[in-house]
Image (tube, rainbow, N blue to C red):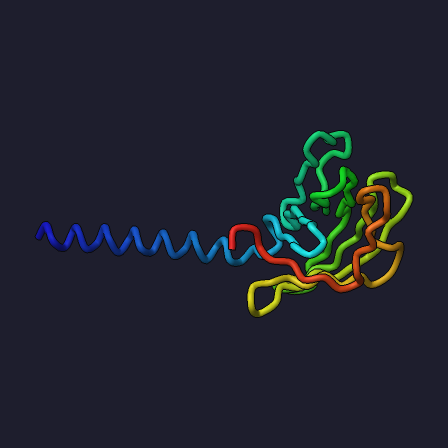
Length: 145
C-alpha cells in the first residue's frame, strides 16, 4: 500500500512540474533576449506590461526596452499588440521622445527571435562618439540559452 502512495505522489509532482514548464513556454514575449553582434538586449513583458527601466523609473512601467551594452541610451517599447502566439507588433520610442518606429518581433521555430523594423526613425545608439545604426532586420537569442 505504501508503494501506491509514493507512486501517486510522484505522478502528482511530475504533473505539477510539466504544467509549470508548459506555462512558461506559452509566454515567449516575457524575459530578455540579446543580439551579440550589435551588443543589444530587449527586456520585455508584453503580457503584464510592467517593466521598469533601471535608474530611469521616471518613465514608469512600459512593455519593455532596448539597451546597448556600449551606450546609456535606451529605446522604450511603449505599446505592443500580440498578433498571434509567435508574433508581436511593437511601438518603440527613444528616451528623448524625439524618434520612434514600429517593428514586428517574431519567435522563430529554432527559438531565436527576429526583429523587423517596419517604418519610422532609424534605430540607432551612440557608441564611442558615433551613431551605430541598427539594421532593419536583427536576430536575437533568449538570455540563458
